[in-house]
Length: 104
Ligand code: FES
Picture (spheres, protein in one colour):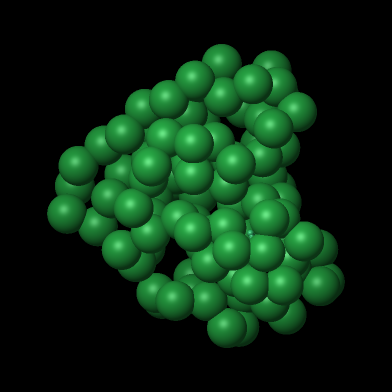
């Protein structure tokens, strides 16, 4: 399965993502700038902020209450498309997912 990250300057990085892995793990493995994943996916650092592109927002869904609170401290602008990518798990329905990195 694949995912693409669009960087603030418009560059795109596409990488293979294994089902069950988070989009944060995949971004770190692919050296996507701006995705740090400092806490390893335990939702305590907010350094994995992404904006889900419009076409994918319904499939990805919204944040949990705790994630919603963590989104208040992210780098880059928080919008309705904001998610912590450590909380997005790759699956068949998300193959081809496109995310924007709001802050590099
Ligand atoms: S990796 Fe720390 S909150 Fe997502």
